[in-house]
Length: 259
Image 1: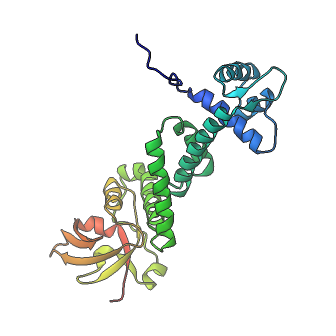
Image 2: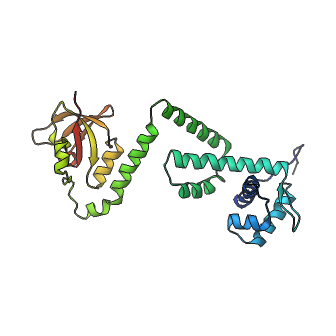
């Protein structure tokens, strides 16, 4: 087999080796020296595993390692560890700031994902984060709208089993206080009223479909047409027309928007 002139291409590091490099970088950044026992504690692995990994990384000129001495990164190792940590931070930020995962879940998923993404994906993800932050600063918080959309969908999903076993979509649970505030079911409004959705009651596959189509809390809806028997119940939402069954409209609580 012919060899291409120049330096041979460096073999890709395994995910575990990348974790070791990143661990050393973080330990040093925190003002601590990196020893075998420090790395073992940080990663939750045995000291023999760390020793074996350090020998491998040393042979690849990524760390400076001698038994019983502190471990440091070579220039090449420091650059590589910085790249890994950058991937981790960008992914974690996306998971927390856009997908609204809690810190522990975002951290665990970022640790897994950082080993699989390529440079092009990471660059686009970083640009997307920059874009969303700029949009929020400009006053168009559609990331917040997405998170509200997710919370509504998740709430419906958690109780869907009880509905499938006999739940009644028409039972909105509207209270006297709601009625005094002008909150009624969507089925109680007539054309050409405009309403703001307050909540979707009951948890059904049909209601989850409505959420997916944009019927989320705070959305403005125009009532277009009500058939003589109530079906279909036509509305306009987010720029398009949508036909509902009256039973579906009864499961949506809304408040009139003054025109």
